[in-house]
Length: 273
Ligand code: AMP
Ligand code: FE
Ligand code: FE
Ligand code: ZN
Image (cartoon, rainbow, N blue to C red):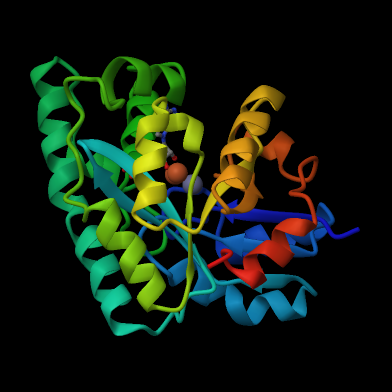
């Protein structure tokens, strides 16, 4: 039986490990097939591509694209895309490029709340390509002693419901789904439960999303059952992954998790259209 994880981050987005370290750890923990799905850039995948073969790991091209629908932050996974597709790369760059100003605005709002954080303290935590995400802000807040862990930071300060949250200037979910299809790829709604509103899930199905990330490692059995039903009833493919970021509980999950083997068949087949 193959061991599979189709949702992994490196330090090209908000993970802590480099692509090389991720591959070595994946090998050590017995994975056969993985996808590096960094947020809004393909740098991590590109860096891992040649190394994967040496490690005897099958690497599926992937990226987790930020989008907006009805004011919500919707993460759409793209698999098996043509990674050189020009339009897709322009789209990714525009989201990526907006992150610096957005992080600056968030730091300013935190300052208004008495959190004396400087942009430099956040920037010194970035990885390979100066990618700036909320996890970098949470890590800087923890380092400066303002929070005990990232959950506290997201709950009190930088979650979608908080004062200091600033949305990214991301494209609509509809546009992202279309861009993925044009680039020959498969679009999958990441961690559907995190929207906490299935009406949004059905909107995305109407927009033509190909699949749901049913087998998300941090979902309980009930949630998996629920999204498995929605996927099957709507002729969607199913994928799964751990959303590894290289820290905390993720290090325990990575290796103990696998997506079912049929996710590979469904990914190769595409949706039923
Ligand atoms: P951003 O794209 O900069 O808005 O950051 C989104 C990332 O923040 C997600 O991919 C997760 O890595 C992390 N994140 C979002 N919500 C939470 C949360 N409630 N607790 C911990 N991490 C979170
Ligand atoms: Fe992330
Ligand atoms: Fe995500
Ligand atoms: Zn992710």
